[in-house]
Image 1 (cartoon, rainbow, N blue to C red):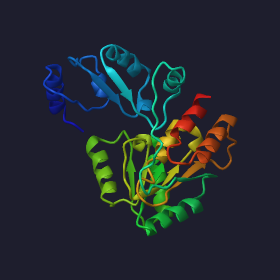
Image 2 (tube, rainbow, N blue to C red):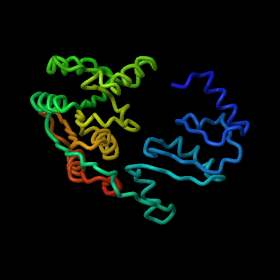
Image 3 (cartoon, one colour):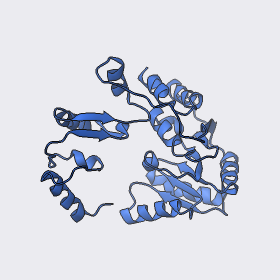
Image 4 (cartoon, rainbow, N blue to C red):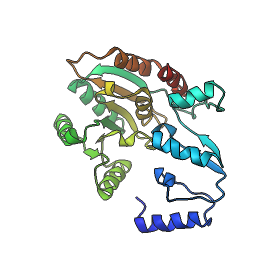
Length: 266
């Protein structure tokens, strides 16, 4: 949400060496940005960087130390670590008063969605509903609003304007929305302790790392959280998809991202 004029001013200051620490998105990997005497590069949520970004990082790495962070290391990074090409360190101690998220795989059920959402609302909490199809997300939101007429439903996805997206997210943060119907835009970086229930629609379409990251959006306070992995009623899942869902249900302990990443690598 940084305005273009401000962003350009910051980029020029970085290029002139007038900034000691710069924090940014993928924009920092732009070819038109040169950072003189770069000594340390920290990459958070490494799994969100694609092949082109990695090629750009190779250029940067020649002159800087690199620390990559991820709850679920991507297979290539994990393989490098297991081969001894890169060092790896794991933090397995969870924050105090955290509980593992109870994960349930089930077919799409209005009853389950209604009961779980109302239970969360009565406890003073909020819920996420992941529907990663922008064309039908408004239709899904209307279905859920009809199912839960007394709750406040909001919609968030990456094709909204900056102003509209910021407004709905601030409303969710301020507890003015009970159920947020959204795309995978909330996959990383969201920390809302009141949100303790998440539904992931068509869960069989997501990878292990994505499922783990989305599940991590709930249970960030001192209350028990729940994750419902929803699949279509009359669809037979492929063996790979079924295995992914079994793994995400099995690995529920805090800090289990490393074990999931090993499964992903296999």
